Length: 283
Image (cartoon, rainbow, N blue to C red; front, side, top):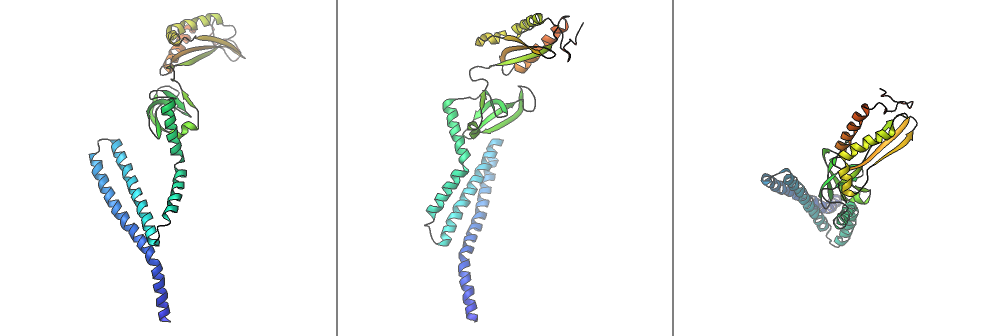
């Protein structure tokens, strides 16, 4: 009876030993790898000259550590079961898994090739992708780096935030390039005046202001400025359309708006519209 119990224990131990060996190898290697890579990382960080180099060293050390651990895990497992015939199957499954996991990065590389060949935009262009707008300052294999404009404010000024856009997104959404052919974009200023206002005189005032402020930009691209009007329930809408460099648009719109307002204040027969259609700046 005792001999049978001992025999069973020995048989069970014989089954457990390979797994213990496998676990011991993994633990020993993990400790050695951790110590070695950490020591190397500290030495490299001491020689780093800026924040980017420190970040690259940390990322590289993690990649090395993870790669070595995976290699030892595979080797130890196959050695413990005493067969290397499963290596091909394992490699096939690993390749399929990596292909699925790296689907977006691979798409990103394809997008990068498209950007290099087709040149939908280049460094320095003002673009909009999704809700992100700004100037491109770098294009890499994985990301496009954008110096954001506007952000949480309605302006064309830089927000101070830098945005990394994954390249694969350029296959998933529309891309607007404001400066593909030139740096000029169209701007609009509209105002609502009362029905009894002298609209013809107002248009002449606005035209004179546009000529002095932005006519030179329209001449560059041979595009005409225009002043259009339309009816509203409580007045007449006057829309001024003109061209301006994208980087100066908000400043120019502000200057033109103030000039128009100051001119209208001096005119007795031009009034902003009230809800009932009558002027609210009657003299």
